[in-house]
Every structure is written in C-alpha cells, then in structure tokens.
Amino acid sequence: MEKPRSEVVLYGTWASAYCTRVQLALKLKGIAYEYVEEDLTNKSESLLHYNPVHKKVPVLVHKGKPIAESLVILEYIDDCWNNSPNLLPLDPYQRAKVRFWANFYDQKIIPSSYAVVLSKGKEQENAIKEFNELLTVLEEGIEKDFSTKFPFNGEREALGFLDIVVGAHACNYRALEEAVAVVVEPKEHPAFLSWVTKLKEYPLMKETLPPHDKLAARMRERFSLAPKRNIATL
Amino acid sequence: MDQVKLLGAWPSPFCYRVIWALKLKGVRYEYIEENLFNKSELLLQYNPVHKKIPVLVHGEKPIAESIIILEYIEDTWRQNPLLPADPYERAMARLWTKFEEDKSPTFFTFFQTVGEQQEKATNEAKELLGIVEEHGLGDKKFFGGDRIGLADIAFGWIAGWLEAMQEAIGVKVLEADRFPRLQAWIKNFREVPVIQENLPDYDGMLAYFKRLREMFISATSHTL
Image (cartoon, rainbow over all chains, first blue to last red; front, side, top):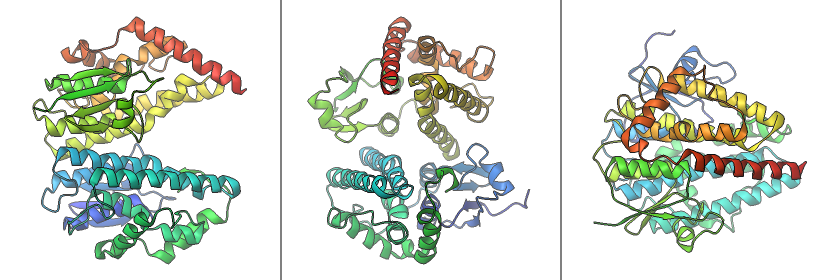
C-alpha cells in the first residue's frame, strides 16, 4: 500500500465524464484535493482496495474512507461541505426534480449514446434516432419542471447539480461527432445545444473538461476503427 | 396541510417501499390502485415520462421513481429518519441503494427466462447476493445499522417477494444453507412492526408470480 495521501483524494481517468463531475463539484466548493490518474488496464492496488466491488472510477477517498458512484459522491460532497454554493437545491420538491432528471440522464441518455458509438450503419442510424427522441424528452421535461429553458440554473452564478451531471458528459459532444457521427440533430435541439455551448464557455467547465483533440483522438481509436466492443472495456 | 396520494399497483415491491416510508414516518396518505393494463389519465398526467407506478402526489406535486420518492419523503418529513446523520453513512446507504437499482435486472432475467439464459442469471444473482451480504450488510443487523433505513427498504423485496418468486419458478437463488447473514437480515426486517403489518399475502403473491411466469414462458416459446 502506498503512503497515506491528502485528506481528499480522487481516483479517476481523464476521459471519464463521471470523474469530471466529481472534479467540478470539488472545485466549485473550493475543496483541496489530490488527483490520481488511474490506468484502467492496470488498476492500482489503491483503487482495488477502495472499490473492491466495482473496481471502477471515480472513487473519492475522504480521510481514508472511500465513496464510489459519481451521483453518490456528488451528494456526499454536498452533505459534507454544506457551504454555498449548494449543488442540490434546498427545497425538497426541487431536489426531487433535479434527482429525477439526473437519473434520467444516466439511465437513459448515456446508455443511448453508448448504443450509438458501439453500432454501425443502419443500426447506428436507429440508435441516433432514439437518442434524439430521448433528448427531446429531457428538454421538454426540464422546461416543464423548472419553468425555464436552458440554462435551467436560472440566476445562479455557480453551476448546479444538473449542470454538472449533464454538462460533464454533454459538453464533449463535439469530440464524439468528430470521431464517430453527428449525434445531436441541431435543428431538433437548438435549446440543448445553446445551453451546452454556454456551459462549455463557463471558466470552471473549460478548465476541467478533457482537452477536445485528445478526447476526439481517443474516441476515434476506440469507436470508429473497430466493430462492436464490450462496454466494460470503456 | 397538503394531501398525500400514492398511486400504486399490488403487489409491486416498489410501491411497498413508499408505503413503508410513509408509515414509518406516520404520514397519512390516500392509496389509489392502478390497473397497469389500463393506466388512468391521472397516472399518465403525473408520470408522463415513465408512465409507471409508484407516483407520490403531495398537494399537486407529483414525484416518480421509488428511490427519489423515498428521498423526497426523507427531506419533507424529518421524524424517524431513513438516513443517518453522518454524511459518510448516508453515502454508504445511497451506494447500496444504487447497487440494488443497477443490479436488479439480473433478478428480472432470473424470473423471466428459461434454460441457459436463466441458469446464467441464477448464478449471477447468487454472486450478487454474496456481494450484498459481505460488503453491504457486513456484520450489521440492518444495512442502516441498528435501525432500518433507505437501503433496507430498497432491498426489502428480498425479504418479502423473493421466496414467492422462487417457488413460482421452482429455482432458488437464496439457498437455505447459504447467505446466513442475509437470512438473519430477512428475519429481522420482517419483524419490524411497520414491515410486518405491510407485506403482501404470500398465497396471493405466489398465484400472481405463477401467472406472470406463465406469461414470460409463453412469450419466450413464441420467439423460438
């Protein structure tokens, strides 16, 4: 086992949106942390020790105690460092709505985007169609639930929970398009795209997102050259 | 005070999660039974995205997805907390609740399939139970410690529904001589008064699962 590290340590990989989420949250709250880049083809002893069940990143280790799963980590960060800015709204019903859409994004949108990158030809066309349908559900749902078009964090200066959860993944869409295919139909989703574009310019997002070219190259390598791959290797 | 309504469908374990949480906190509510083969306008209005039960309606505010409903109940009615005060313990409760959500499809596959596919799902399900027992429950009486909490409620279907499911199929995942700590947890969970008084009747459930199983098997044979 390596020597004890800082009070807050994040084990992650540079390309993972789930890890970007945690970095955004830590930085937003001004929490000092040590970042450890993992090689998922050669997982460290620490990672296997701290996440024996899933052996995945991100893992946040706070005073030696590990927490896994990005959404759980975000809630932990909000619970533990309950200074402003709050990641989640304070009102119970607003919280429920934010959690609902965060879950929708993870359980529907992200798997749908995997279906796109892991398929070819006609199958990929269908996957893209389905992805756009889900995106419409997301857009309409958020507009209805928060009474505001994107950006739905309204007058807030700081990023909110959904900005982090969605943004960490969605802001990379250009890299995906360069590497694989145009996924988001611009004519169908101007609101979503305008929000993502604004989010990308947000200084904290800009400095935390993986570099575009590096990510596009990685995606090209993984998705456009070979046929279907096992999601587990991602 | 705003009225509380719960749209549900017997014997959905997802609905029972909400029932348990409301009763543990002493919240009065009106229960509305939905026919899932003929969903009401109310349900489609309150849960347009997923069109599923349970839906909790507080005043005019609908909340869908059982775990999100539980968190809402916890945020709104602070008595008899379902989550501990310590942030790390809360995170562990949420982690295991998420594990249950992410891994439960294996149990659906176990119930819905036959032959090789079912055998594979059965083995995976046993592995999952082992992980839950060793890493989630550990030496504790409940996932929540001395008292039941969010994760216990999320896993509650193992204590109330799994046995009937197994009998309906004729295959066991929770073997009698394995998973001693999980077996003890089941016994303790069922003895909590609110749980004891709010479990679907076994015979009714068995008949229900047998019918469901028939449906899945005939669907499978039609695709062969």
